[in-house]
Image (tube, rainbow, N blue to C red; front, top):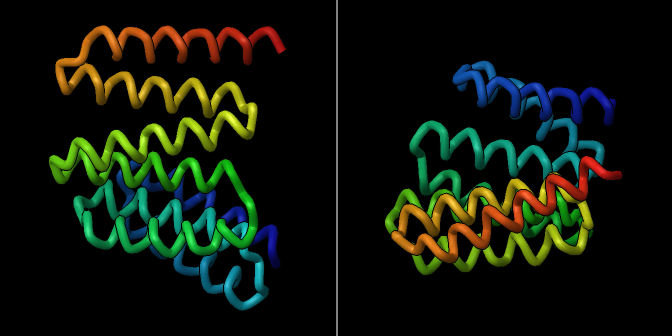
Length: 161
């Protein structure tokens, strides 16, 4: 049952990337229901992160922020640093869409701090890339270049392992 909930959550995440929002929401709803029923807080946190991404893709910023808040409460209990970092990245994207650069930057930095604890070079690299793009969009090109350099370094480390 727990594996089915995890798979539904991941399938929902994939569907969001393909723009199939209604089908994604159906899968995420089923995943969250099972995770809550079985007490699987790891899947619950992951599913809430995927819900936040769905809402962000749909332009539903308030719903995305609510899903992030709920997800952060859940992952605080589990210690799941990957999902916690992803939630901060999603919140950074929502804040960026809301034109709140200060809040967005705080969440990008928080995500990077959290991902550093995971030592997952792929997550670290992607977070540096997203932060670098944000900085470039702010006209902070030197800082953006430094973030992209760190992203490249992280990706190279991943490929060496």
